Length: 141
Image (tube, rainbow, N blue to C red; front, side, top):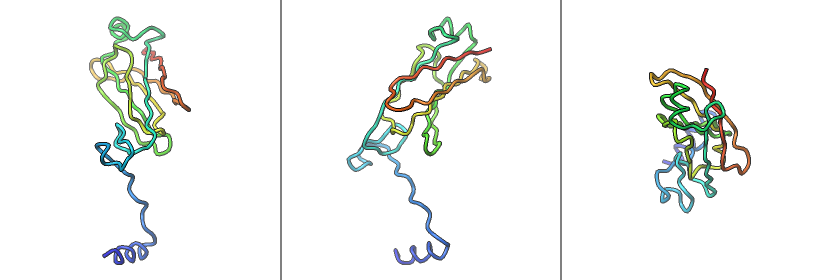
């Protein structure tokens, strides 16, 4: 059967690359760690994403005054553009903690929506190097 698959691949002009390893729990990773995005790695990282509202701490007052009903917090892989977002995220308390991330997941975006779900504003940052905390200032109009 293996020979038939190899002949079929070669007959089609080449075989596709292997699928990336995915996981649900650490036991799926053969000694590595299963990250929150379902990828095995031997060097997981963590990242705290904080946001402010026009330079002010994101609390109930500043979020309401800016008309923010909810946020989406997203993290993306710089090398593959794979993206994982979480929504709804409450505006206060002003931060979200990602643990067990693959090292390549360093692009961060925070998007604000009105209580009716309309886009208000967004901000993004690249958490380069060994950065473990980033802050994005949201400025709704």
